[in-house]
Length: 486
Image 1 (cartoon, rainbow, N blue to C red):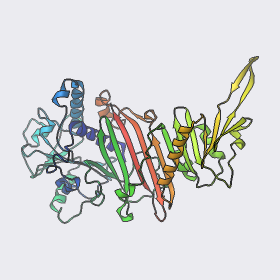
Image 2 (cartoon, rainbow, N blue to C red; image 1 turned 90 degrees about the vertical axis):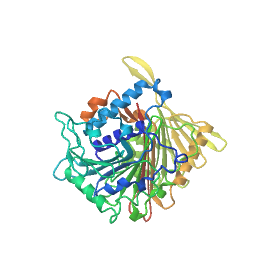
Image 3 (cartoon, rainbow, N blue to C red; image 1 turned 30 degrees about the horizontal axis):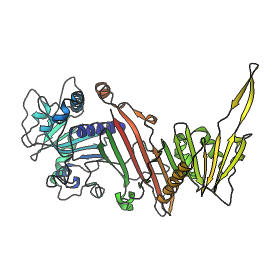
Image 4 (cartoon, rainbow, N blue to C red; image 1 turned 90 degrees about the horizontal axis):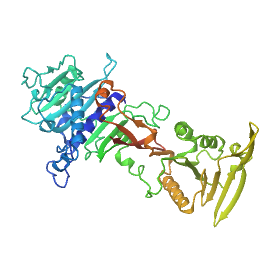
C-alpha cells in the first residue's frame, strides 16, 4: 500500500473522527444503517485496488461544556479540516462541514498505466439542499446536476480535477474524468452487478470505517516468501477512535479459502493477565524466528539463537522491557539443555540453588584488568537460568516466584492459542511507543508544510499474529496498530 494513500486516508479518518461522533445503536436504531446497506456502494466501479468506506453518524466537534476549555483544540481542528479540504480542491467558504456532509464517504484508488501515480475517486453524500457551489466556492455559480465540471484553481494545490453531483445527492470527484463516468455507469447497472467486497463485509457490517486493499502496511510477516501474489487475498482494515488513540485492525481475508473474520476469533484471543506487560513480547517457533524477528532482539539473544540446537519446532517466548530481557522455552528431557556450554558464557562461574521444584542458576564473571598501569575490576553482566515446571527460562535479571508464575501462564496460554495442526504460528506484541515514531506524513510534502506544527502522530502499540495450518496453502495474518494523536 502506498504511504501517500495511507496518509490521505488517515487524515480523512481523523477529520471524520474528530468531527463526528457515533450515535449509540440502542438510542437510534432506526437511523443507524449497516455499512453493507449504504446506497453509496452502487457508485463504486469495479477493479479498484483500494477502497475506503466510512459511515459515521451524527456531527459533533466540541459541545458547549467543552468549548471554553478546548478552544485551542477546536481552532486546531478547524485548521486541519480546512487544510485537508483545500488539499483536495474543496473550499467551503462560509459554509460549515456539518451542514453539508451527510455521513457517507468512499475513497477509491485505481491504477493508471499511463501515469506514475494512481488515480483517485472520492464519493460522498451531501444534504439535499446543498449544491456543488457550497463545496467549491468559485466566483461563478455552478448549479448543474448530471454534468461533469472541471475544478481549476490557479496557483493552488488541486488534488481533484473533476466533480459531479447526482440526482440523489452524491458528489463524485476524481483526478480522472473517465472514473466519474465509470462511477455513473456502475450506478446505472447496480441491479445487475455484485459489490466487489460484498462477501468480505460479512462480519464487518457494524463497523463504521473500513479499508479494503491487497497489501499490509509495513507488516513484519508480509513478504514474498510467505505470501505469494494472490489477487484473491483482501486486506480489510477497520478504524476506530478511543479518546486520543486511533486503532487500526487489519485482517487477511480470502472467501475462496474460507478465510473470513470468524477465522480470527481464536487467533486474536488475548491472555487474561495484564500484570507487568513487557514492551516487547515475541512468541514464535525457532525455525521461523530469524526470518522476520531478528531486528527486534538484542546481541545476547541473537548469540543465544545461533548456539541453540533444540528441536526446529521449539516454541520460543521473548519478553523485553527497558534493559531487562528473558527467553523462555519448553524443557526437552531427551536432549538436556546446557547453558554452560555457550561460548558467550565461557569462563563464567556458575552457582545453583534449588527451591521446591524450581532450579535457579546464576552465571557471573569478575576479572582484574590492567590499563595504563592501573588495576581495575571488570564485571560482566550476570545471566540467570531457571528451570520451573515444563519451562526453561534465561534472563539478565533474577525473577521472583510471582513473576515466574505469570511468565509460565503467558507461555502456555500462547501455546494453547496455536492450533494443533498449525506448522506456522508467531505473535509479536510491541508496546514501546518510542520504537516507531511518526511525527507527520513524510510522503505528503505539501500537506506536511501546513500541518506539521499542529498534528503529530506516534505509533504507541502494535500487534501482529500469523498462523498457518495443514492443509492451508497460505497463512492468515492479523495486525493491530494503535496511533496516538497529539
